[in-house]
Image 1 (cartoon, rainbow, N blue to C red):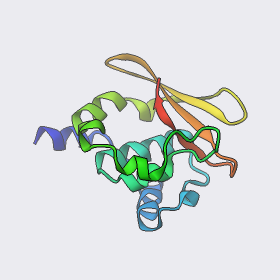
Image 2 (cartoon, rainbow, N blue to C red):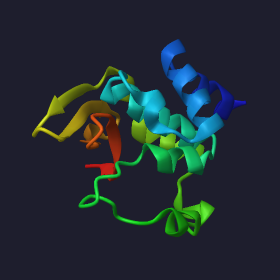
Image 3 (cartoon, rainbow, N blue to C red):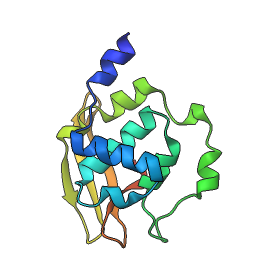
Length: 139
């Protein structure tokens, strides 16, 4: 029951939930168009919580010089390396109140506070203009 209570503290807005459901249905990042970097990060976190790893991979940036591993390699990542719900909720607690700072024409990060202190979540704007999650987002 505690897990359910903790997860209920992390929620998507209606627009974020709609985008998430649409991405789950067709695995297209086009549903992120117009969403803020914080919203994209929240969808990524929700996908991790729901173990929707195909959705999570779609949310990674696809700039050739930033891609860290292939879809096939992603599918080989063991469940034990992806983090528990409790760990994810603790790590990303407060991200919805985070502030996005753009650091270049295609890079930025979301600065937020949680019980561990100041955290950063890296984002990369794809060549199509959509903000996506960095392959290793936590700073």
